[in-house]
Structure formats: C-alpha cells, structure tokens
View 1 (cartoon, helix red, strand yellow):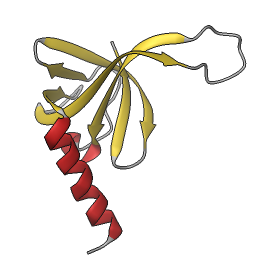
View 2: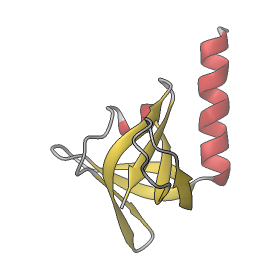
View 3: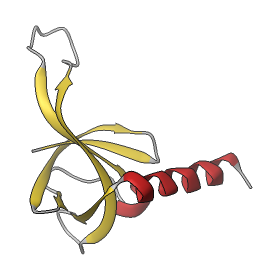
Length: 102
C-alpha cells in the first residue's frame, strides 16, 4: 500500500469521524454529499505588503475526492440550515481544500 493511499484513507476517516454533513453544489453540475469543517471568525492575513487590515472570514475545509473538482467562486455548501458561498480557494494541497466562504 502506498503512502498516498494511506493518507487518502486517513483523511477520509478523519472527515467521516469529525466532519459535519454538507451538500456541495457546484456552479454547474449536480449536488454532492460531503463532510466539511467550518471555521468561523478566522483572521486572514494580507497576501502582499499593501497595508491592508487583517480580514475576518469563514473557512470551509473539504476533501477534493468528495467534491471531485476545485470549487469555483459561487459554488455553495449547505451545512445544516446555513448556505455558504465560495469566494476563493485559500489552499489546495491536492487532498484537502481550504475555501474562503460567505
């Protein structure tokens, strides 16, 4: 068994154990069930030296293997009764996506 397979299995187990049930709806295409972690009031640092103030946002982390493609701006996640709309991809390590949402 390769290290990639072990990591994929471990991340799927972790999300299944502690993740929240969600429904991902891409900008175009069918809705998909998935597990997510929602982090509220996260302070985002500016990307460059423009003098911008620190911004507070909500992040969603999900498995790329569950949503199948990297979400585009405008895609949504329904978590409980709250709909989060994707603004941008903050991080994509090929396994876990971290998304800035509103």
